[in-house]
Length: 130
Image (cartoon, rainbow, N blue to C red; front, top):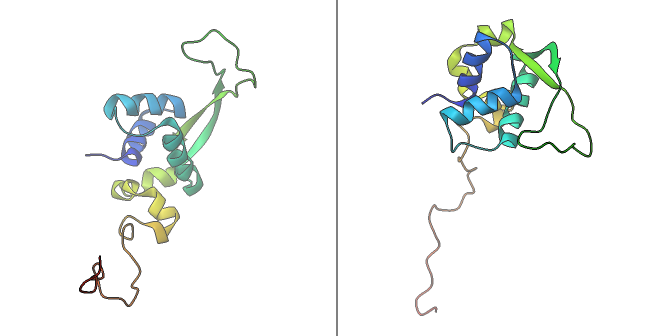
């Protein structure tokens, strides 16, 4: 099963996309997998790593399914592409870009608890306790 990072790498290798276009494609592949907010937050990690970049191309944004104007106005949609650095990174590394940006949160460390010095397991109740 491919991860979001691997999929984005593949799609941006084909042609530039906006985050919204990538998210819509991702939802077709993995319909029950995350919100736009989580998807765009993960995409921001790829930007911070320098694996993707803006192309400089934009298009006017619009609300889907509504003719109403957005009260705050909408920013233009920005197109992104894979950078040479992102293309050179081993595809396996794209499985956990968050762990690459924040090594202390790498997948290998997630769920691991720091040793407390206490014996593992739940403490036993003393005899006769209710």
